[in-house]
Every structure is written in C-alpha cells, then in structure tokens.
Length: 276
Image (cartoon, rainbow, N blue to C red; front, top):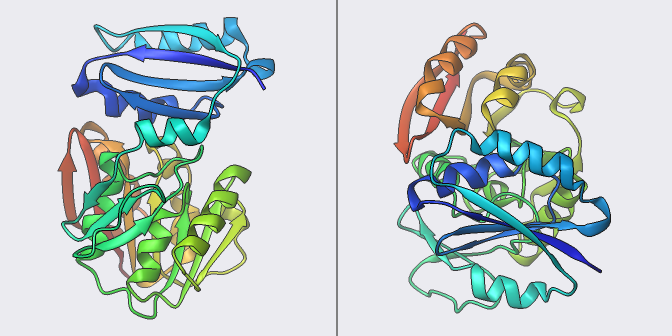
C-alpha cells in the first residue's frame, strides 16, 4: 500500500495548534518530529490539488510554516510509533504509554494505541480535561464521551469508578480503537458506538465529556443540554482562549455554567454544570 507523506515544518509554539487543525483532513496517521510533524494519506485517496489548496489556506495564518509532500511506498507503522510516540504523564498521576513503553509502577498506567484517532494524551486539551476530571468524583456516574477519539477520556472515567460510559464518534476508526484500548486497559464499563450525539437514545447522563472543536461544541449545545441531567457535569475543551466568551454565552442559554477554567498554550478546558 502506498502513502503520501505531507511534512509540515513549523515553530514549536504553533505545533499543537496546527496538529489540532490538521485533524480536519482525512489522513491515516500523523507523527511529531523536532521541526514539526508529518501526516500520511492513502495515495489513491490523495487529491493533490485539493489538499494543497486546503493546507495553504489553513497555513496562511501561521508565519514561518512550510510543507512538502512525497510518496512513501512502504511504512512500518509499528516502527513509526516506536520512534515518534513518547510516553507522557498527565495530572501528575497518570502515565500514558504505548505497549512498547515500560510500565511506571509509581503511577497509574494507561496503555493507548495511538493509531489514527485523536487523543494520545499529548495535546494540551487532553491534559486540561484530565486535570479537571481528576479533581472530580465520578463514582457510579453514567457518562457520555462525545467524540471519543482513542477513548482516552472514557478510560479515565472507568478508572475513576464510572458505572456506565457510552463512547460515541462519527468515525469508524475511533470506535474501533476505543474498543481496542478499553480492552487493553481492562475497562468493563465502556461501550463504543458509531453515533452522532443527536442520535443517542439515552438521556439523563450524570456527566458528558467533549474534547472536540469550537464549531462542533457550538453546533451541538442543544443536544448536549438535552442529554445532560439537571446538576450534571460537563467537561469541555478543544477551543482557544479567544473563543471562551462565545462558548460561555451560548452554553449559558441552555443553563450550563462554568465552574472551573484551566488554560494551557492558548487552549481552554472547562468544568461546567447544568443548573435549573
């Protein structure tokens, strides 16, 4: 199978922002390196003109950024993972690792297969929600993970004693990798389903997790409110500090109010509660 590698060279302070933005493209996977990152596309699905135009439009707001693309006929993904995916500690307690990393006995270990889904723990938004969730009691909670990616937030909810976790995503790859990661970590309370939030039949969730992006959060605020019980918890991230006011105003229309806010590298994480 042949792949196209799109290599983006960028300053360190814009790497996280660009990686998050790059998830809009239907890539197979991406890897970080010292001077930026690389995204991989299936060659027979790679529309050079469309991708070039889209990337150029995206990068116009980022100075000192360039990109190239080249054909890669064979890729050993396991080797790529081992050379590019480093373990990370979140909330000073959780060690996020791949199967080829050594276990840290003094920390709570998560085993995450990076695969093609978003959520390896390295992005600031994941760290923000991890920290907010760690400060909350989720024992016996019924939880909805909206846009589950790799399932990393669902796994944390399971570790923290949630009794029921529905992990939903509109990407089949995310459902597959969430199911795999739940099994690897021995999580018994996670059910992965290929659903949009408006199609979720259940309501009255004690807590909803949503680490997505600004537009998806704004477009689905009504559905989120309908699924969340009164006095329920909502953890949000995936938007920049300059979008905070817009998020706040729109969620308060549905009686969802901010209780705690964290920021890192221009990203925001919120713990909110639905009030009467």
